[in-house]
Image (cartoon, rainbow, N blue to C red; front, side):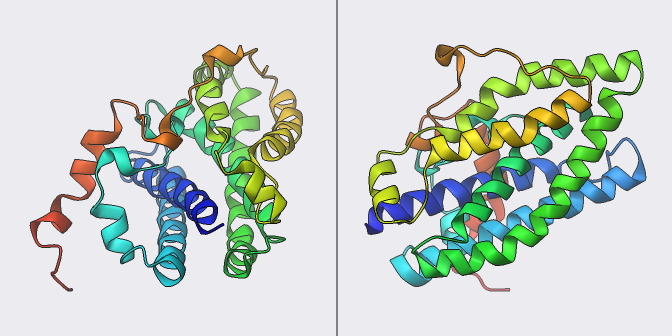
Length: 251
């Protein structure tokens, strides 16, 4: 059972770490000052969530320090989805990714409040409150821009069309799905995906947007098993550059 829990924790934490770094790239570049601050704050929360989960791995599974986990692994050892690895693109894409990702994370943590792994359930109860504000922010702006000008609507629909096959890849099944469900650790990726679709569909409709049809063969899988996009390796090298100069250094 330990391997199943570790796999779940790595999936969650690696997604949070990578998208947190991606969202931090908007600092100083937001289309308006309010959004510059918002994306910076969201990024800080996400990296904080990664830290909390890496700490669980250290405390319960002897996985090394959070810094060593985050910055000491090679690209192939990450469990992140391709969705979070993609460059920030334009604001429409980053906003749509924020909307799709944070709805999934909010529901994931809500489900995990019932986990039989007590340390994760306790953490989920804490984090789900923060994610409520992420979701409110994303819903507001997706609706506002989807119903805005002809150009803003077109940009948001294009972003949704581009992002959706990658977003479905967040729910790539784990080889431990049965074990997680049998032991009441987590209901599973299929259950999460169903809840996610139910949650986002009304908001997409309210924004005047249309969820694209995606063939199963077009869903972008692989990241959970170490097969990553071309974007992750340069990102890992950049974000770990200082740590790798002297991993034993203290601040």
